[in-house]
Image (tube, rainbow, N blue to C red; front, side, top):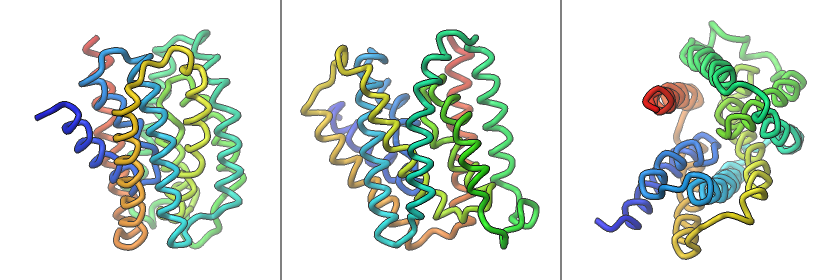
Length: 249
């Protein structure tokens, strides 16, 4: 099968999954596109950032159609993530990468564990979401994401759920919060990016459609509890894959 067709089909599946969770697709697109492109910095990362922003944006449209987006917290969190992430990119030049990954894996392990706890074992679901704490935690989450180049959504979504946001609302807020940083992070790549525009156009269209329908699937058919558990599984799988990559170097 032609590589372009394989990439298109694979990205379609990944975009639906990322759209269901309000994530940009980069968390999965980077390792997937890396199977076909060998230049991580100039090919894979620029294309993944474009796809991340577009898929997050169209997931946002999908959630907005069902009225699930809480615009004020979403916009404020988007501002925080966009401003904070560049500091992480700067700190990455001065902090030992092993420390960064240790922090990341510890945070992911904790969040994955909490995703599988019964609702009654976590925070009182009847209480109001803790938006102030979400804003505070968004700063270190975005800085850590900027240092590691993984995007803030992967840590921000479970954090919002643990702060008592209903999972569907958390996914909708997350979709907006991760969109602007994707495009701002693309700026340093503009001068050196080597992207096939025809391929990029095809993948962007597929990613946009897939993310929109993923968000619609969640909005209409996926219970909040099931969404929470699905993300917990995804955290474990993707983190195990990333750990394997690091240890196999």
